[in-house]
Image (cartoon, rainbow, N blue to C red; front, top):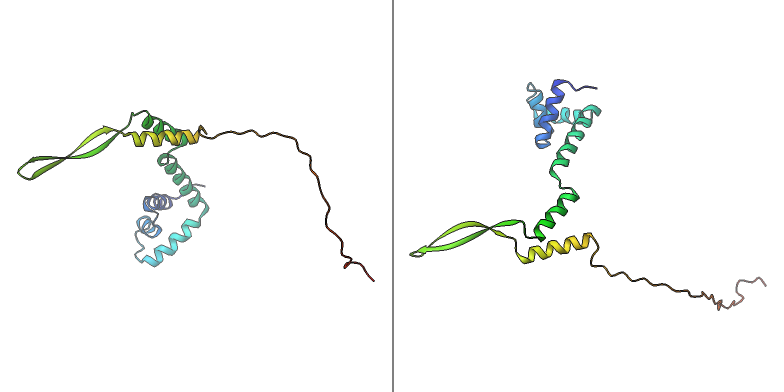
Amino acid sequence: MKLTEKQRIFCIEYLKDLNGTRAYKVAYPHVKNDNTAAAAASRLLRNVKIKSFIDKKLKEIEDKKIAKAEEVLKYLTSVMRGEETEEVVVVEGIGEGMSSATTIKKQVGARERIKAAELLGKRYALFTEKVDIEGNMGVVIVDDIEEDGSDEED
């Protein structure tokens, strides 16, 4: 179940921008018509081997780009502890009505640190009040529906 060289080129080109028409025209340069390339690309994308290859590569890309829970928790912890910095634009007057803008790095503010602490607290359920209610109650069923006799046959 190996891809042909042209199929492999199509897959690699398709993964760049998910444009099947463009990818097909790169892999098969003799095709000039966009409609023909689009139809052929659609057929290729239904091919089991090609679909499997593309899905595998997309999964690899996704795994690299999307933060995992542990990474998010580490980042929130570093923000809460004040270990992260942010860039801030500072405007300074340099005389005669002119000013200069520069960027500086500063520690994250208290608001961001508190928000990070809140998010971590929610994750670990630190702010939920647990109330245990126990008790024994008897259940009483009262049958107080009167029969009016309309269901009975005469």
